[in-house]
Image 1 (cartoon, rainbow, N blue to C red):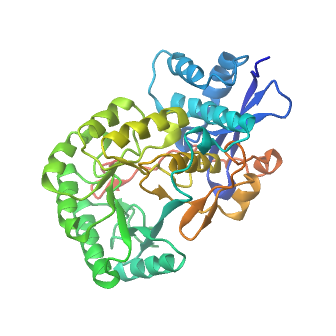
Image 2: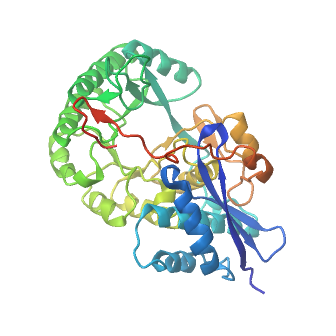
Image 3: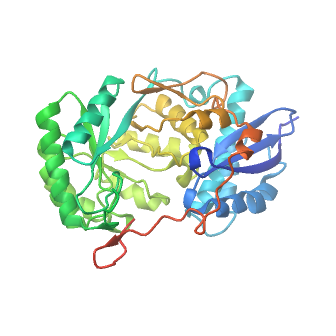
Length: 399
């Protein structure tokens, strides 16, 4: 008798005040279930509705072994497709089905993807400060913990900026030119005082006009960054062709992509060096493993999006892909605090600047429903919407 989907449930929980969406697929075999990440923090309730009201009734009774067919059926089930809400809902189911398949096989998911290419997953650490010296100190502290890759972000005096906190009394506004000048000064300082013993990264976060991003990439070329992230908004991807002609600074792109037509041309034409997609926002493990295989043939490495608003289940999925994909590049780090580890037993271990698997069957992680219920979503008038960032004249910028 086939094992079938008996029920699909979503869990909304916020350990450490981060809104997470996790899907549990329950089966006809008593005690057998799987977990998947469907976290879209800014539209969490929409994803939960898509899972509970649409995918659950659509998929009940399906054979849990038919992962690819279930994904393809769900993909066209809403007629319009390639949107982040449906993709995240599908990811929750897809990752859970891979978790179930691993448990049935008695193997970690990475074994089902072809086995390990490496023993652990190197991480990059987020480092920031009010000025270049403070960033340097943060990087040195990270190096002492075993990190060999650090993302460096610096505050811009009198302005807000991505990756560095707004100080008391500081204006919550943004301007591109002061930011570009500050970043150049930051990396001049870091290379002078740290030398080449640490790999450095930086995230523009698509906030500057495209020509500013090209100028910044050219000025940073002498500092040999591991990568420069998100120089352009998804709407401006054609600028990658001009950027490639201007500089050899490695480029990571894709955090906001959810449609294959957004990233396929950049890979095919070798205009980026690292793919940075949020795995749940492209639909889960099934499309991500195909994307990684495609990237391998074009010399593009993986660097899956991995901030705090990826659930520990999603981080576990990232890790299994990282272990099995030959063209792995780097993984973004998020440290799981004690409250999160209590809600999600089996969180991947982080030590010596790397993430290590526990080698349990499936994704190797669980959800404590009682403890998850103790840290519900906090009441918020905007339900987690991304706050607007404005220029000095009041113009909203991206994002």
